[in-house]
Amino acid sequence: MSELSSLVIHTKLVLTPSALYLVGAAKSTESYTLHITSLVPESGEIIQSAMVPSSIRDPVADFYVLSNGVSENNRIIWIEQGSLKHVGLVPELNAKPVAVKNAEFGLLVDVGITDKGHIVAAKKDGSGRIIKLVENGVKSVHIFKDDVSLLSFSSTLYENIPQTPFEHQSQPIYTGNVDESGRVHVARIYWAPRVGVCLIFPY
Amino acid sequence: MLVWRYIFDAEDRIAGYYTHDNGTNIYEYRQYLFNVTLIVVATLSGPGGAILRTFDIYTGAQLLEKQLHPPELGHHAEPDFFGKHVVFAGDNGTDIYVLTNGDTFYRIDGKTGEIRWQFSMPDVRYALQ
Image 1 (spheres, rainbow over the protein chains, first blue to last red):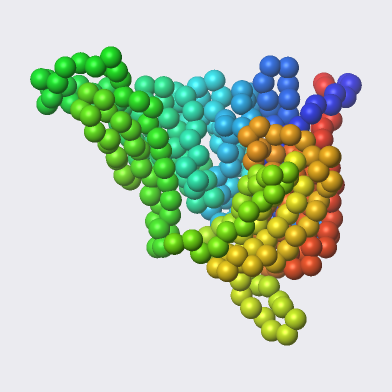
Image 2: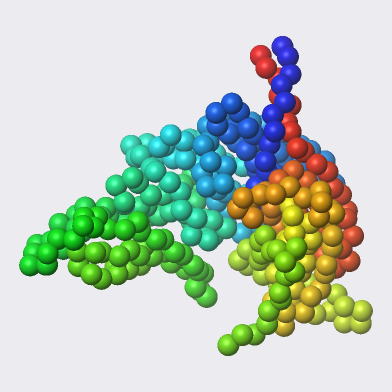
């Protein structure tokens, strides 16, 4: 048994009542591996340090931490070769990663409310889902339909409009916020060239 | 309407600003003679997040400025926010936890700027089995 060392870039601190977590990505040959350290907030003493079995392409955009205030329910969520995975943060760092079944995702979109337990996961076809942190996992709470159905709907309504070189809608933009009552809002906005309008779909 | 602003120097560009989570938005900042309850926003700026500042979110008054490392020891990051973070202690105090340079961690007294502990973890060692 030999020992190896790997550079690790930390990107997130997560404070819970029982531990402070340092979340980062350790450089492997062709990708990054999630790395977590739990420590005692008062003293800085390390409780545990562990690699999470994972393969991450981009340490800037491919993993986030979902939290909901200072609580024990916090999860790292990441994209790994089209699949959406997540793992709970516990001081012993022995939780097993879970994959969301039957869905392929292209990217995670941080709409500024990961600390309110929400993030958007977008598929390659342009559709998107709002992913919410729940007890013991994550849940898809809303689906923004794919653009293809909207495009065909538009073309029957506006069939007299000549086709433009822009056959497809532009990339959607997602935005999110929390109102005074604490309710989460997420909207998808995109420009529909065939119809010539900007479409906004709020949740 | 512009309420307040703080302009960072060209060599001390802002890398990120950090607010509290919901429910713990209140930050006790004890001044010399009386207790006031403040909501603060923290910033990290300069190479690697060299300087920590906190501001009163309503007035923009600067409450704390603390240099964590000399600018020349800061690692360049793309995008600027990468490898930096600040979280607040929440209900049980005014301390602030800070990550700079992607590898250095601090617990800092939010009132005085005193560093309670710090350490660096630039790499990790693991056993190959």
